[in-house]
Image (cartoon, rainbow, N blue to C red; front, side, top):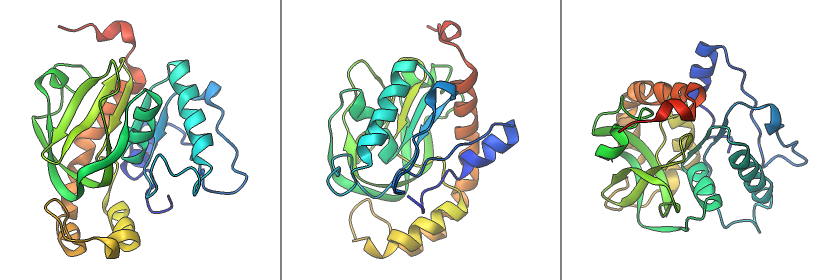
Length: 231
């Protein structure tokens, strides 16, 4: 979506000298990316759901691209809707979460995940920005990475370099303001839903996201499966 861009991911790519190719699937006659020459696929968020193919027919193209990337073995990172799309392609069920989760809420990482090289830099809890009404079950064969009180599966690791995260580590201050302007007026009070003012009041929290996100991206891009033997 226009209001859910790469955020901190663009900063990471520029700092590392990587080139980003951004595919806006919702644009008519969009050209699919050439994944045979890609080193990494990152699937971002959006206000639609994985089942909304009638309203958003381009979702079929996006799912096909994800499936292709999974078959090639390149690293794949899904974020929010992106994580739901990746999880669905891996055989998970995606549907309405028991409660919506919007705003700044803590995410807890499992002890097993924090022993894995991709997540060994992560503390037990991190503050995170959420904006989701749907959620996914753990894909078959995947490892649970994180959870929160309203969302049983906040993250998963499938194989060694496929990661899905329900929250938004890519969000920076500009990203947050864009989504608040686009969707903040739609928020309805709930146990795990903050209003626009509360979200704006905690935006400085996003300055800490690179400490979580950048090592994860580096690890997914550079670490081979053979080097990920751990106990």
